[in-house]
Length: 75
Image (cartoon, rainbow, N blue to C red; front, side):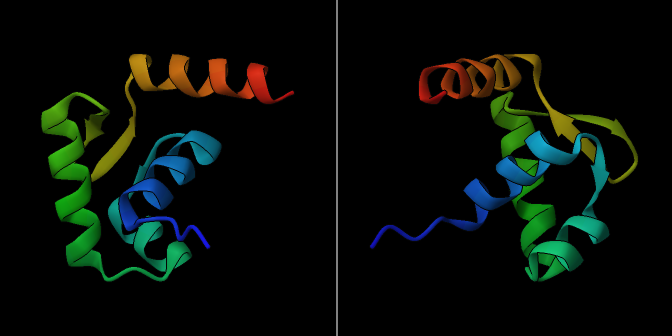
């Protein structure tokens, strides 16, 4: 059994939904807001997410390309 981490869930959510604010992510994924803020902050620092407005994040171009390549391989 392979359980997804909260970071993986947030990343997948941003891939599917595009730019989204912290509170919406927390509500939709049932993760506390503090954890979502920590995740997006860390991932933005790593270059995986990009901040587009106050509290609003999107996947970086690099991450989008990686997800699209994975999608093609699986299809």
